[in-house]
Amino acid sequence: MASSTGSPTPPAPKILLAKPGLVSGASIAPKFGRGAPSDDDAASLRPRLPPIGSLNLLSDSWDFHFDRFLPFLTENTDFTVIGVIGPAGVGKSTIMNQLYGFDPTSPGMLPPFATQSEDTRAMAKHCSSGIEPRVSADRLILLDTQPVFSPSVLAEMIRPDGSSTIPVLGNESLSAELAHEITSIQLGVLLSSICHILLIVSEGVHDNSMWRLMLTVDLLKHGIPDPSSLIPTHTQTTNLGLEKEYKDKLLGREEYMAAPVFVHTKLHDQEMNPRSIVYLRKAFAQCFRSSSFMREKHDEEAKLIEYVSACTDSNVRGSTLPNISLIPSKNSDDSSEPLYESYNSALWKLRDQVLSMSGPTFTRTVSERDWLRNSAKIWELVKNSSIIGEYAKTLQNSGTFRR
Image (cartoon, rainbow, N blue to C red; front, side, top):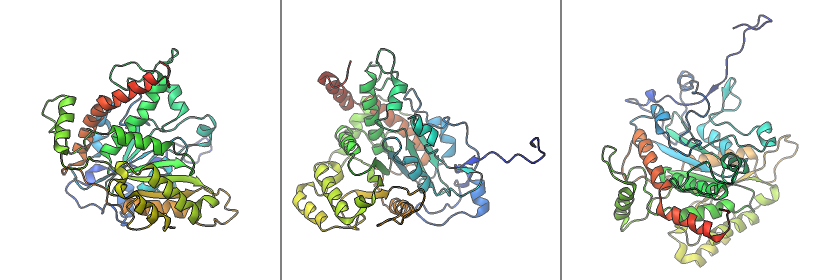
């Protein structure tokens, strides 16, 4: 269509999402490789998405809709699932776009994941809802999520009487504040169960709310399997039966947990110096000493602390600590050079770090489509978890949250 001035109207921007048809029966690029498809292939991998929100795995009603994303997946078994969790405005979507390989200088292309605009930030709103999935040509399945601890999310789920519009624990009625707390835990448990790698993003080095959340997730995740451990889809059984079967299989081996990467963003120069990094890693070792994140070393805490004290590099090879990545604040005017590392350099380093990781493998080989179908079943287990339910009752009876 031409404009009133006679000049052609520019085409609408497209959003990146890989077509699954190019994978079946064909060779694909290595999952963690640098090799990019040709220009023609890259163009074919960038169709326009359905309307915003229609691909979300989790809806506003907190239901899992795997059928929306299923057409974009294949029977391929060589894939990696990377999720992200964190508060609003910490840069989750920006990091996921980087992992996808999105080039912000590409003309006519919107990023795979929408990032927070100035208007959204000014109105204190969030731009991601539920779980928003994308899949790259390298068969990276990326899961961006709605923010945790978000006032705007709480505002959307609260009724005039203070109760929650979302049935987070079956049909049990909870106050919106308690339901908001439980949704963050459920999201963390789900991502820890269905991802190979989970990015846990915080702003600054002094906000330990995400550390506390992941300790709670580690405590309450028991009995939730990985997506390959469930029985075939045609077999009918109860959630309790699935949970019991998985617990029986766990005898003698560790429970599945996605490999965590703790990312601290928007750091100032003084927070990037070697001494601050050592202090942060010491604090992390102390906080997570008894968690499954430190399972191999928590009985040797003194040795671990001593080892961390000798470390000045945030990416020391061979460390048994979970990966910790530091991202400085973005200098919008580039008026001064960073003392330690630039924003873009740190973001690229994080991408290299994540894409070179060898995360845990699922119990059995599973295809992309079976992973998605079974993830829906795992979500039902999470929502009906007796352990999470008891924890919610304890919080309710503590008087911390209004009834």
